[in-house]
Each structure stands twice: as structure tokens, then as C-alpha cells.
Amino acid sequence: MGLAPSVAAIRVAVRRALAGLPAEGPVLVACSGGADSLALAVATAFVASRLGRQAGLVTVDHGLQAGSAERAAAVAEWAGRAGLAPVEAVAVTVAGRPGGPEAAARQARYQALADAARRHRAAAVLLGHTRDDQAETVLLALARGAGPRGLSAMPARRDLAGVPLLRPLLDVTRAQTRDACAALGLAPWQDPHNTDPSYARARVRADVLPALVAALGEGVLDNLARTARLLAADTAALDALAAAALAAPHGPHSSPSDAPRSDAPRSDAPRSDAPPSDAPRSDAPLPDGSRTGSRPSDELSPDGCWSGGPLFDGLRVRDGGGLSVVALAGLPGAVRSRVLHAWARELGAPPGALSHRHVDALDALVTAWRGQGATALPGGVRVCRRGGRLLPVD
Image (cartoon, rainbow, N blue to C red):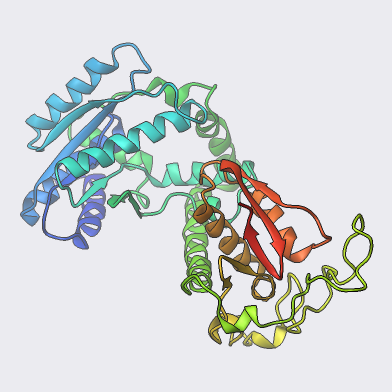
């Protein structure tokens, strides 16, 4: 009997993922014992041996179910027999971490994986998320009103504290991993959490996705995953533009700071309890001729790409210890929101607590200025608008 197509597909996916890694250090597979990670582990052991590289395995015991320690030990024992090394079973503490139970378990798991990778100087950690997981993630992001970053779902690669996390199976289906396990005589563990309706992902998996497939056809899963890939590319481009806008070193420079101050004090200023008369309306021209929250259409090429403008003419948003209102107002909204989000994190706002509402409040200091007071951010950070700049409040 020839090689099962599902086994071949997973091996090809793993080979592609390993191709771009540095030669030094093992690769570690994160394995729960379920079909997805089990199929990934077997394929990685096969491919790595033929590439002359070491492949190991880490299984994480979250301590959330009876017998979890014994199950982690059984996975580790199987890995040793399968030729994987190094092998670790790591126990973590989930209780007391922020967020719901799923978020807390995920945070503990990724921290354990990153720590194991550093101990073994691993080139990367491989995760077993499939195309089905990707489709579920897109639907969950839609349900909570996420923006492009959330809808980008899970990247094929990301770095966690300097450790590359790879997802080779994002183009492989859950049915393929199950078929591969069956073809190889493996008995995957069935995680009861995957069918527990108290978890949103389990409800999406059991009810929502089957209903979508029944109504729209099998192609809906591929389409959702493709949407994630397209949005990930767009998000990367917008992130790069935001990073360019923040790239200038701290300190005053000529472009924004020398522009007239739209919120500077005036001798004919109105009484203190009314918004300043020189505060621009949301659609009023700023001193540099731009409009808050808009982008001049003549900076767009026929295909909708920017042909020039402040980002590419050397204008940067940093102005001393703050951000220039004029420069921020000249940015497209999608770039400006990323700049404000990144800057808020620089100031010390915890990423996990920083939401779109906080970024919207910062944006209002630029695009809907009415003389409002300081904006409060998580972590005790406060930002005000003063002298044509957004500034942290000491």
C-alpha cells in the first residue's frame, strides 16, 4: 500500500516550514496528544531526520482535568519511542492569570513552550493549528467585532520573546490530520474541552461551522482561511507604515513642531468652560492644509496606492516627548490608529488591556478636538493635547 495522501500532505507542509530555519538547534513540536499535534509530531520526526536536524517534543499539563499529568507523561513516553528528542512534559499553573479560562491556559502554555525552547536553544516551536482552527478563529473574531488584525487570525509564523512559533498546518484540514493518524495506526487523545459547549470555540466547531458548510458548501472553510491571509498581508503593510511614522528618534524636529499650533492659547480665547474657538472642527482644515481624519485624494495613484505625502516626504509624528497633532491628522486613519496604539504601549499601557476604545479616545484628541481633558489609558497612563502635541501627563 502506498503512502496515504494525508500523510504526504502533512510531511510536505512540515518540510516547507523547516526550510527557512537556521541549521543550529532542534525544532520542538508542541503536542497535546490530539490528532492535529500528533500527526504534526510524526511528520516532523520523519522530515527532520531526513534533513539532518534534531526534532523534539514538549507537552504541557495544564492541570485542568483529572489524569492530566498521567496523559502528559504518556505523550512524552510515546515521543521517546517515536524517536523525538529532547522530550519534556511541563506542568503549568493556570489559576490566577488574567482573562477567561481559555486565555489563561493559552498564556500559560505559550510561556511554557517559549521557556522550553530557550532551555534547548531550539530553532523554532511547531504548533498544530489547522485550516479548520483558522476558520474558527476568523468567525470568533467577527463575532467580537475585531478589526483587520483580529480577522488576520493566526499567522504562519510569529516570534514570542525571541522564539519563532511556526504553524505548518494552516493549509491542512482537520480531516487530513485524523486520516493521517488512522493511516499510521495512532490513537489520538480526544480533549473533552473541544466538545464542551461552555467554550465559545467548541460551540463554533460543533454548531456554527457545520451550519455554514451545509448552507454555503465546503469551500467556505478555505474562503475564511484565505480572508485571514489577505488581511494579514494588509495588516503587515499598515503596520510597516505606522512603524515608519514612529521611526524618527525622540526629540523635536522641524516638520511638525514648526507648524502653527491649532490648539495654542490666543488672546481672544473664549471663557475657560467652553471649547477653544481655534479648535478645528472634525472636517476643518488644519494649519498645514490637511483635514482631520482625511487624506488628500491627489496623493492616491489610480490603483488606490499612496503616491506620496507626509510619510514619504520625511514627515514623522514624533515631536519632542510627544506626537504632533498636525502630522497625526495627515495620516490615513488606519495608520494613525496603529501609531497611537504603538505609542500607548511605549508609554506603558499593558497590551492585553489596551482596547479599541482607548485608541479611539486618543484619536478623538486629534480628529474630534473640543478642548476635552486628558485621556486615561490602562496602567495609569494619561495623555493630553497641549501645544499642538499629544503628551503623556506626568
